[in-house]
Length: 70
Image 1 (cartoon, helix red, strand yellow):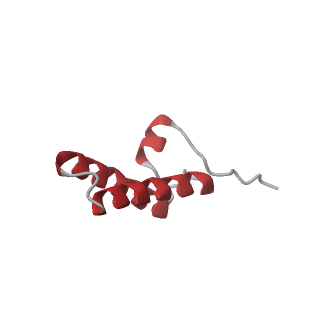
Image 2: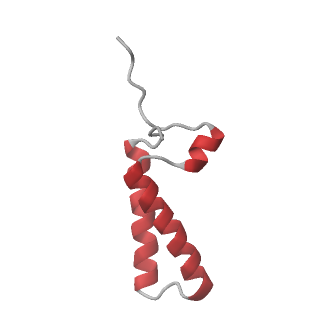
Image 3: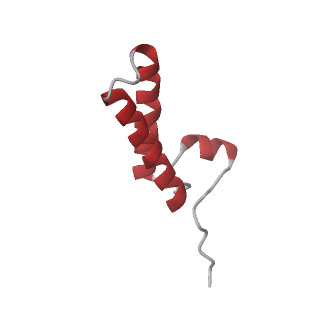
């Protein structure tokens, strides 16, 4: 798996995961909506740490800076 998630993208994903966690922990989100946001937050957290997003790979996106060959 080649990295396709850049630094800014990782930061945004971590922020989204943190917001989802805070909303669930504080009880703002409950029930099915909490489960959905929990799954989305977990996916964002995992893809941020791995540096790879499966959807990006499917659609050909890459937010990593490409190093130029010398």
